[in-house]
Amino acid sequence: MSEPMFMIPVFHEKIWGGTGLRDRFNYEIPSDHTGEAWAISAHPHGPATIVNGEFKGQTLDNIWKTHREVFGDAKGDVFPLLTKILDAHEDLSVQVHPDDAYAQEHEHELGKTECWYVIAAEPGAKLYYGHHAQTREQLADWINHDHWDQLFRTVPVKPGDFFYVPSGTIHALGAGIMVLETQQSSDTTYRVYDWDRTDSHGRKRPLHKQQSIDVTTVPHVDPQLTITTKHVGKGTIKKFVASEFFAVYEWRPNGDELHISRGQAPYTLASVLKGHGQLIVPGQEPYALAKGMHFIIPFDVKDWAISGDVQIIASEPGTQI
Image (cartoon, rainbow, N blue to C red; front, top):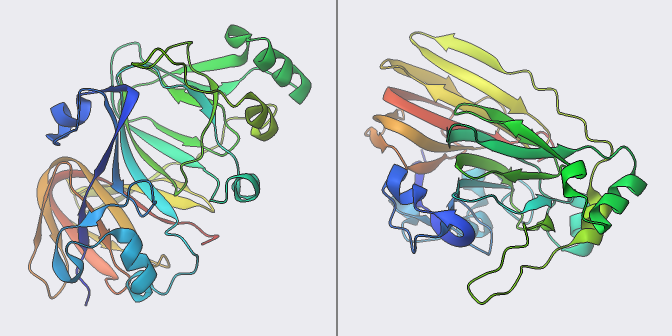
C-alpha cells in the first residue's frame, strides 16, 4: 500500500502580500511581501516537493508523469488541482479567470474555477465578488470608462466562510483576509483593475480589459451551494461543494478518531489548518499532523482515520476528471 505524500509549499511574493504565512503557520517565507503558499501543486510555476517515502525529494509534477498508478491511472496531461494559502495584506487586484475552452485556446492551459475557505479575516474585511452590469455592453462600458464603483459588488466576510468562484466571476480578496484556495491547476488571471498602484520600480501592473470583457459571466449570479455536515462519532465531515472540477470537505475529529472512506475519487488532497493529530492508515505507522502540513492520500488507500484536535480542508478531483 502506498504511503501518503507530504509536501512543502512553494512561496510567491506579491505586491499585496504580507507576513501572515509566517505569523500563522511558521513558514520560512522569502520576504515580508509573501502572498501565496502553493501547498499542493504540480503547476510549472511552482511544483511542490515531496518530503517523505518512496518519492522523497521529487516534485509532484514528476510523480504525475511517471507514476500515474499513484493517482489511480487518472487521465489528463496535467495534475488537475492546485491548493494554495493566500495572505491578502492589501487588496488583491480585481480579476476574472477564463473557462477551459477560452484558456486552452488563448493561454494553452486549463481554465480556472476556484473556491475559498476563509481562515482569517479582520473585522470589517470584505471580498469583491461579482458585478452589477446587466449586459455585456454595459460591462464593457463600465470597464473601459473606469466606472469601478458602479461595477464592483462587495461582500462582508468572516472566518469559516466558504465561497465558490466559477470561471467568469469577477473577484478579489480584500485586505486582511487569509484563505485556503482550491482551484484548477491554472495560473491564468485577467486583471480588471489594480487600484492604480505601482511596484517598487514605479510601474503599474498590466490590465487585461478586453479579455475580462470576453470571459466575464453577465449578469452575475451567486452559485447556490448546499453545504452538508455528517456526524461521525464526535467528529464531523462537512461537504462544501461537489462540482465538475473538485469536491471540497472539512474534517474535524474533535478529539475522537474520525474514520473516512474515499468513495469514487482516485486520490485526496488535504491541508491542516489548525491543531495537532494523526493520520492513521491501515498497516502503516501513524503520521503526525500539525498546522501547516499538506499531503495527498494515494489511490490504493481507500480508508483512513484522522485523530486529535485538528481542522483539515480536503479536496478531490471532480466529476469531469
